[in-house]
Length: 246
Length: 271
Ligand SMILES: Nc1ncnc2c1ncn2[C@@H]1O[C@H](COP(=O)(O)OP(=O)(O)OP(=O)(O)O)[C@@H](O)[C@H]1O
Ligand SMILES: [Mg+2]
Image (cartoon, each protein chain N blue to C red):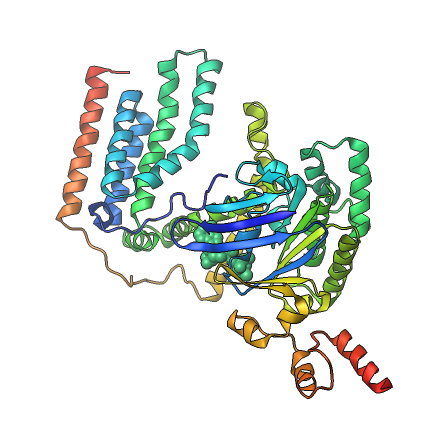
């Protein structure tokens, strides 16, 4: 059966990607995301997927990334088919929105796999954004592994009751997931209330000034990485605008 | 029969299960015991194919779990997990029980018959139309059990059935297990609740650190303090009084639960 609990989970390694400041990586994925969403060219998205894969190999977490990609493959196919049939477009036009999802997933997976949630929270804290935003964001990030594990447990409980996930056509396959989604959503809401209460009883003050326990700092590596990636995106944009490739 | 042969299992790094050999016959009542992290849950997840052996094999009747589907295995082996709230999704108790029956393709008459039957067995008849989410913890546990008994599986595995349950719930559970055993169902409970096991006296399989360290009658294993302590468990409380009496030769065997102890005292009093 599908193993969800290890997806997107931070993999501790000693590589260049891991040493980069979380803010650098975050800015880079933001730049890429904007490009991916706006770019009408699937070729550029394939290039981004390849680039992320190379970076994943250098960060020694390529296998983990492949697993996340495999997990979204059904969605990728659904979007591909939906675009192909319902809008009666040709396959090239259908490829763009589906590859958009896939490239976003690879870019974000690379970030999650190489950034420890704690480092990321610290970096966010120092970004100057309001605490309500940064706290929600880092909490959400921290709960990804827990959430994945929970989905896994719910899935196990339901298949043990005879639920077949891959039965029927695409529409009924989506419906097969309802017995998994409902418990997961209810459990998540319950947990978020519990977390809120726990933060409150421990005296979280949203207005107080906070000082990070761990210091993070940008180094020359970060600036080079940032510059290189900005350059790549500028190049890709130029390719899209001037060469107009599909 | 569930047959486990030289089973080894790993999630990726260390072996969580090591060289497990076990035979569970039809109609047998058995408790798999061990402290936290001993590998009990990991072991029972092999019985319905949720986990596949890394080495060795698990056979359920005529099905090899590494080849058979979870669907076919679950039809024979029902697994009831520790947290029932992780499976409820229906609007009513009735629908919740009906879910598995529909999945396994039973016709409507049979489904109605089974739902009424298991709801009665688990003392839930009055709650048919309630939402599963509004039930008390004990009722939710019973509903989870009802869901699993509905399709009449031959093997029923209960993971930590007594955790967080009051005395009343435990008594109900005891009765239900007795009914199932009488119906010649195989009942497998996974637990570290030593008093509960001492009361029911099933065959006990003791696990420690991924291995089976003992397999035998409850009275032999639960009265073996050294064995229990080395596996991270404590002996039942009655042992504190029955052990000295046994050592002095006043009673013939170390007694593990209070009912047997009272019976033994009565015997002694009568002479
Ligand atoms: N999905 C998983 N991935 C990796 N390791 C796991 C996973 N599930 C369990 N383990 C590990 O396997 C070991 C055995 O766990 P298991 O849940 O089988 O123990 P248990 O005997 O049921 O314990 P408990 O009494 O706490 O329920 C533990 O060390 C646990 O950390
Ligand atoms: Mg367990």
